Amino acid sequence: MPRLLIKLSCVNDDAKRRLPQFLYNEPKPEENMDKLITQKQFRTNILGISSATFWRLAKAGELPQSLKIGRRSYWTTGDIEHWLAAKKESKEK
Image 1: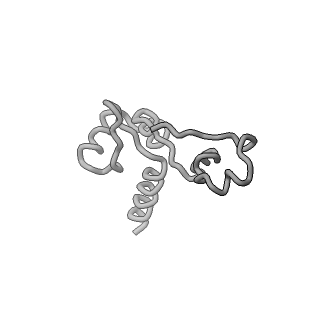
Image 2: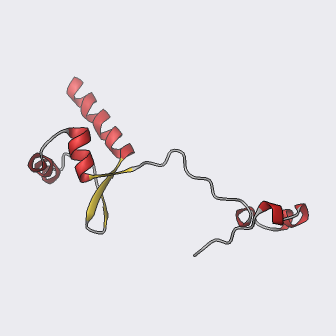
Image 3: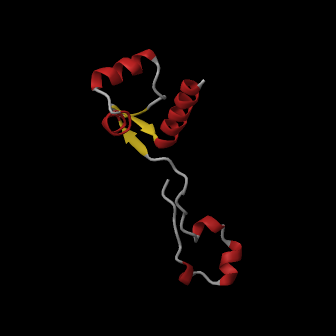
């Protein structure tokens, strides 16, 4: 459902008090929103492994859970960071 945004210059103070705030304020982007990483980016840039090794790890359940959008798989940067930290902790023990 599209949101109707009213420019602040068009809204006087009396109208601002009567209108819900979301009608005249621009939505703020999430600063802590995770980026999506493709399978190729995750495999080559972060892990540095071959595609065969990547899918062997995925089949064994050793990779973080992916998001499916259409036919493609994506991973969030936050999930990858948590997964790498957990792997590092388990390796140190």
